[in-house]
Image (tube, rainbow, N blue to C red; front, side):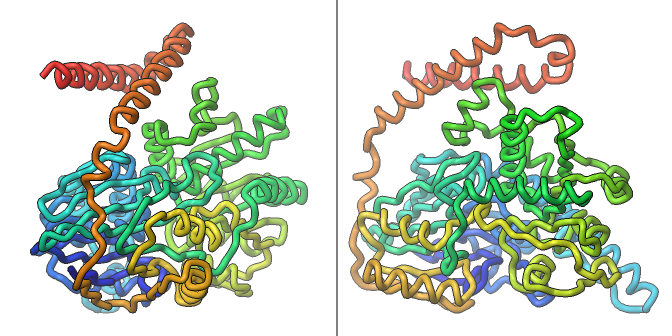
Length: 541
């Protein structure tokens, strides 16, 4: 078996690993490189393998640094199977269509200048048609199910707690009558999260590819970040300023909406005292819809809130901005407001316009709530730049700059170590990926001290050949473990949800609700009915 490290090696973006075993080739993620111009050029480079030779692609989650080059892979010959969780498939469609639109728009803008200069025209990394074609290869699965891909690979997804649908990949590899279990952590979430569950525990691994994004940092407590978020908004509004939040459209934006909803609910503000919150990202709106369609993946607290009649993604002063005209009008008004806009690293999207109009004014606050890659606009601002070039203008930075690490969707150093510590049968081979070198070297030392394990830090393009004897971890032992108990528990949860639904069904929905939601409501009920009929037929075989 060979493992080839082609992305997110000694850096955070471009996640891409190739597993060769049993005559088959399997990719883990196919993400886009992000950061500065050098990172962007890596996306246009040829793949270090022939895409047509790849049999399978397993996707850990739908962030663009994990899926962003899938349309390029398909464009250049891939025609295999893409396996992901259902929620990841829902989000990937939104993310890749948006990415393709950006690719086409950026190239069109650049080509206008090239035409005038008599230069050769450029082609986009991929087009919307390429993105659409890639969707035909996606297959969606649920957590905790064993998926027999073929005679070599068996797969199971566990909840990684990073964003909705994010997965830890458990991969059993059978080669020459030997079973090896490889685990890819994907991006691990934090222990406390507003919406989704904490990362699941892995029982055992022979080989572990483990993320290390914050391998040298500790987050401030989650509750502390919540309080700090509200304090920043109130403090900025009191001086007549606005809070501008560059935020990833998938994951972080939904967490922010949830927290602000709870804040205004708890405070019981009168309407005129509510600082308006604008989510200025069409993709964030679509992602929020996808989150709501996958609400079965929310944690217990959030599910109870929903069953109690509170929609965590809706409150009176929340407004989703959809049109360019609406977005522009936000920068023409001077009243205090919160603007949450993509991209999270401030390198693309509408956030650049909001930064251009707000960075220069000391009344305003620019608040970063996510990871900022080396070379990104966000990293430059956080690192103390006095001015920044945006949309052809040099802008002085006079606004207050803040960062909330406790809202990060990535586990910090201690969380990563605790997750590794919970693995009962520790890996024989451990590779640190998805982290900058200083974070990885710190994790390497901590892992050695705490667990006496040797963690390796692969170089970009490094190939590791696994040979000789490996401890067998039989998949047969995992099959059948409390399967009946799991089914009974799932059935119990379905019955509880039906009871909650019936209580809500007693309410008078009203003509407006029925007119607006009839199609989605009816389709969901029909799907439940059809699936239950399918289960009954299976039982009667």
